[in-house]
Structure formats: C-alpha cells, structure tokens
Image (tube, rainbow over all chains, first blue to last red; front, top):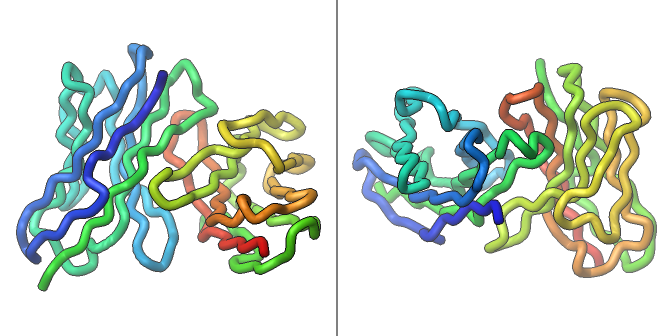
Length: 115
Length: 111
C-alpha cells in the first residue's frame, strides 16, 4: 500500500530555532516525487519544496530543506531559523510515478512557533 | 495572475439539497483534482481529471460527481448532500510531473 505517515500531530518550537518535521513514506515504486505543503490558519495550501526519488542532492528552498533518506523512506522537512509566520499546518505528500493521477497526503503536523 | 478559483468559499446547506462547487484555473493545466480535508485525515482525493471529458474516481468518490467539459473548469457536484460531507474542499491543478496548485478552499457544512 502507498502511504504517507506524519507521526507528530503538533509541535511547539521557540522562535529562531531550527525545526524538523518528520515524514515517512511507503511505496513499491522505484520512482516517485515527494512534496511539502504549508497551510496557514487562513486555509490556503502553499507549495514549499519538492524532492525526486532519483535526485542526488537534498532539495533546498530558502529556509526550507528536505532531509531525504531513501533507504529509510523518510523525507523530513527542516525549517531553519523559525519565524512566527511559520506557525501553520504542514503536509507531506508523495506522487508515485506509476500512478501519475494520484498525490497521497499525510495527516499533517501543526507547528506553533513561540515568541 | 496564475490561480485556481473556487466558489463558494463558505456554504451552509441542508441534507438533500443539491449543490455545486465551481472550480476554474487559468493556467491551461490538463490535470485537475478535488480533495477533501478532514481533521486527522489529511487531504483525500475525491475525483480527478487528466483532460477534457476524462474523469476518474479518487479514494473517496461516494456521494460526489464531477464533469470536465472545458479545460479550465472542473465543478464538484453533491447531488444529495449528507452531514458526513461536511468538510473543507480543495480544487487543484498541475502540469505533468509538477506540484499541485490549490484553490483557496471551500468550507461546506451540511445540516
């Protein structure tokens, strides 16, 4: 079965600290893509970062980086120097290339940044 | 501005009263999809469309219908809404291999 697991329902982090949001995935596809989305309290879904399963390097986008460990089937999101505006729900998602019509989402992690 | 537009954004209705949530994208994307978001369950795919006149069921299609008569529009139809369809609904589109672009969401309450 193809599945995304986010084991942290909620996290509290002090402002300016780095934070890691966990994501593990399960697929038998040799080729797949991994995504992270942010959902602030206003409700919209914002794309943050993408990692392809054959990418040699971990993806980075500004303060966001993806710690991709293929053997462990994990794709953790790292946010450096957290800001109050990072408080939001974060979703990990996967698209197996054999099933191009489907992007599977995890249940999400609610991140709260303390001032 | 590239965007996916959903309407209505908020709706309260009663059991059995047919409703349609519209979705329109201006990016000429072939692929469009509907998701529902429920607490603790993340986003689950309802229906998707790979192109005009091509639609297929996602993971939770029961109680929903869709149509894709034009490339830009992908309405979600609830023929006879029930309280278990109370949810936050997202329409999304993308290019092949790309990330999903989401609409702003439609919060539906069925009494």
